Image 1 (cartoon, one colour):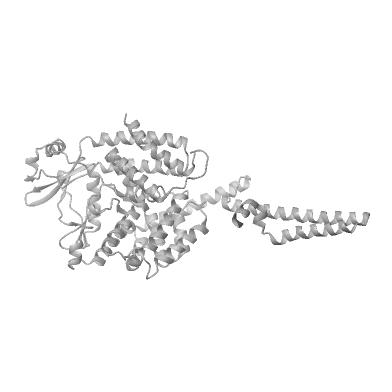
Image 2: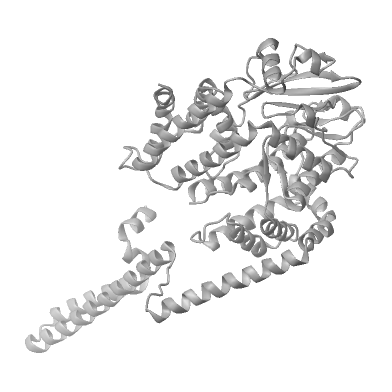
Length: 543
C-alpha cells in the first residue's frame, strides 16, 4: 500500500504543476498564478513531504539545490526541511551495537550516555568514553534500510508512469536524480564507507591547522556502527556572541570555509557533499571542524581541470571563457543558444563585480538565471549541485552576520590567492597518467574525425541547425517572398491599367491605376517585413 499512499499525497501537486504548464494538462496556455499562491503551495508541498517520512525528506533535500528542476519559491521552501526525528530508546540503540560488535556496550565503552546528542532519519548519535578518550557513537536506526527500499520502490513506480504519460526534460532529470540518490543513500547507510571517506579527508587536511576532522576508531566500526573522536564546537550559524566579542574574525572564518571547499572540490577531488550548519562546527580555539561524511562525491581530474579554468576565467571577468567552460563541463546543452547565455552571463557578472553591488541586486540576477535554468533543457551534474550547496551555505552564513555581504567580491581575491595552488594541481599527478590522458584524448579526436569522413563518403553527413535559427530563417524567407509577390502584383496592376487606358482612353482608369500602384508601393516601402510575415502579431504590438 505504500506506493498508493505516496501517490495519493503527491498526485495533487503533480497535477497542479502540469496545469501550470498547460491549463488543461494536454492543451491550453500556461496558467498565471500569483507569487502568494505559489508560496502557499510550496508550504503545503513541504509539509506533505515531511509527513511522508525520512526517505522523502532526504530526497527533498537533494532537490532543494536543483534550480534546473524546481523554480522559486519551491526551492527555498523545500530547503527548510530537516530530517530530525524522535529519538529511539537507548536500549534499542544498545541492542544494535551489541549485535554489530558482538559484545555488551558496558564491555566496549567505559561510559555510554543514554541521552542522544542527535537523532536523524538514518542514524542516532550518542556520546561515550574509551578510557580517557571522548568519542561519539553513530548507530544506524533498525529497520531504516527496509523503509528506504520500500520508499524508493514506490517512488520509482510512480516515476515510471509519469515518464510514460508526460515525457519531457524535467521528468527525465527527476528520474536521473532519483537513480543517483538511490546509489548515494546506499553508501550513506554503510558506515564503513563513511569511515574510509573520513580518513581520506582527514589525511588531506592533516597539515592545515585551521581544519580538523574527527579520527575514526576502526576497531569499533562496522556497517551499522561508527565510532569517532569527539570534537567540541559551536555550530557555524550560532557564532553571534563570539563574533561580537572579537573571539572569531568573520572574514578569516569565511576565507577558511571557501578555501577548504575549493581544495576538496578542485584539488583533492573528494568533496564533502552534505554541507549544512550542523556538519560544520567552530572549536573553542577557532578551528573549523568537519563532520558527517556519509555523502562524499569524487570529482574526476578532467572535470577539476575544466572547472578550475572556468573559475579563473570568471575571476578575470572573461565572459567567453566562462561560457566555453560551461559547455565543456556539460552545464549547458549544445542546443542552448550561445547568445542568450552570453547576455545572461554578462548581466550577472556586471552586477556581481560592482564594488557597491547590493545583495538584493545580485540575488535578483541569480533568480533570473535560475529561472532560465528551469526553462531550458538543462540538468546540472551532481558535482556542481553539491558545490552550489557549499557556496550557498557560505553565503548564507555571511549574510546572517553581515547583511551587506557580497559573495563575489569576497570570493574573487580568495580564488586569486589560491590561483598558484590551483594551477599547480592542474599539472600535478603522475606524468605517465598525463601522457595517457593526452593520448586517449587524441585517439578520441581521431575516431570522431574518421567517423565524420566515413559519413561524408557515404553521403550520410548531416548538419543540424538550432530550431531558433531555423524559425528565424523561415520567417525571413516568408517575409521576402511576400515582398516579391507584392512587387509582382503592383507591376501587373500597373501594366493592366496602362493597357486598359491605351485601349479605352479613359483618364479615370489611368488615375485609379496610379493610385493603386502608389498605395501598394507605399505599403512595400513603409511597412516592416515582420508585419507582413506575421500581421496579427504586428497589430497586437501596435495596439
